[in-house]
Amino acid sequence: MNSKQVIHKKIPDNPGVYIFRDYRRRPLYIGRATSLRTRVKSYADADLIVTRGPRLVDMVTKAKSITWQINETVLEAILLESALIKRYQPPYNVDERDDKSSQYVIITDEEWPRVFLARARDLDHAKKEGIMPYKIKRSFGPFLHSAVIKEALVILRKLFPFKDKKSFDPRHDAFYRALGRSPDSQDESAHERYMKTIKYLILFFEGKKKLLRKQLHNQMKDCAAAREFEEADRAKRLIYALDHINDISLMKRERTETPGDFRIEAYDVAHLSGAEAVGAMTVSCRGGFMNSEYRKFKLSKNVNDDNAGLREILSRRLNHPEWAFPDLIVVDGNEVQMKSAEAVLAARRMAIPVVAVTKDDRHKASRLIGHPDLIKTYKDEIIALNAEVHRFAITFHRGRLRKNLL
Image 1 (cartoon, rainbow, N blue to C red):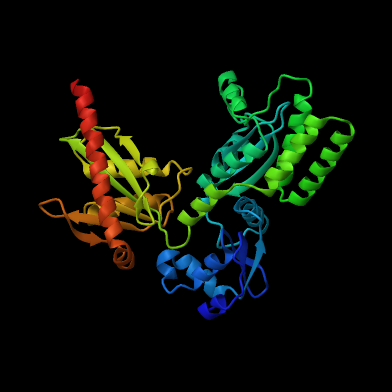
Image 2: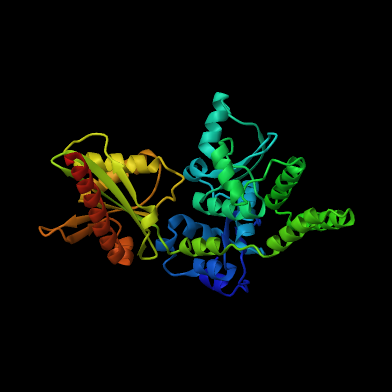
C-alpha cells in the first residue's frame, strides 16, 4: 500500500484492532489502538522508517488492504489483539524476542482458582522439565506488552474480584479482601459465587461480552424472583460496571506507546578507582523522563573497567523481559562502548540501535556516534538522557560510599 491509499481510508475514531492484509487477505500485521483513525494513518507518515523501523515499512509495502474491528473499550481491544495474533500468527507480529518475553494470563484449576501472569519462557521451561507448580484451567495470551496487560488485570480485578498468585499468604489475601479485590471465603455461598466470577472472567477474556451481559441479566431476574435481592444487586452492579469500564489508565499508556514515541534507555557506570562500582539506567519517552522506570545496579566486581561494567548492566537489564524493551539505547563513551553494547544485543539476537555520547574535557556532549537518522531526530533527547543517567549513577555511587563510610 502507498501513503495515499492509507490516508484516504475512512477509518473510525474508536478503540479497536486493525489488520494489514496481503493480496490473499491473509493477516500480515495486527495492532490495536485507542483511535483507529490516528494509528492507521500514522503508517503513512514520511518518517515511518525512523518511528517504526524497516520491518514495518516492508510490511506496509506488501499490504494490499486494511480491515478493522471496533471495540467499546481499549481493554477489549487489548484482549482481541492478543486472541487474533494467537490465531493467525501474522509474520510481522511474530519474532523470537517477543515470543520469549510475552506474558500469559493463567487461571488455575484449583478449588479456588487463582488468576495471575506467567512469562512464556517460564511456562515452556516448567512444561519441558515436568515441574509445573499448578494445573492450568485456562490461559490467555500471548500479551507482548507486559505493562499493558498488568494494567488491564488491575482493572479487571475491580470487576471480577479474584485470588492472585500469592493468595495462599493469609495477610496478602486479607489485604486484597479489604480492598474488595479478592473474594470473601467465609460464608457458605462464597465458593459458588466465586466460581461464577471466574466463569464470567473467562467469558470476558474470550470476547463474549454480549453473552456475559445476557447471563448477568438472567441471573439478576432469577435472583429477584427468588427474593435474593443482594445477589440480584450484585449482578446489576456488574452489568453497570461492564457498560462503564474505566480504562483511562490504559488510554494514557496507549498514548505513551504510539508510533513515533521511541522508548529510549541510557546507561552509565560510576566507581572510585574500581571501588563501589555501580551502574544506572534511565528512561525517556515522548521527550520526558520516566522516573518510575529508572533502575540501579550494584556491579558484581569492583573493577576499574567501564566497558566491562556496561556489558554487565546491559546483560542484567535484558534478563528482565517484563520491562518494556527500548527502541533506542544510549551509552556513554565512543565506538568501543557502542560496539560492546551491540555485541551484547547481537548475542541475544536483538536488533536495537545503539548511540554513543562522547564527552569533552568539561564532560559535555561533544559527539554522537551511531545511527544518523536517529541522532538527527532525537539529538536533544539523547543528550539530555545521557546527562540524566550520569547524574543518577553518580548519586547512587556517592550514596554507597557514604553508607560504607558510616
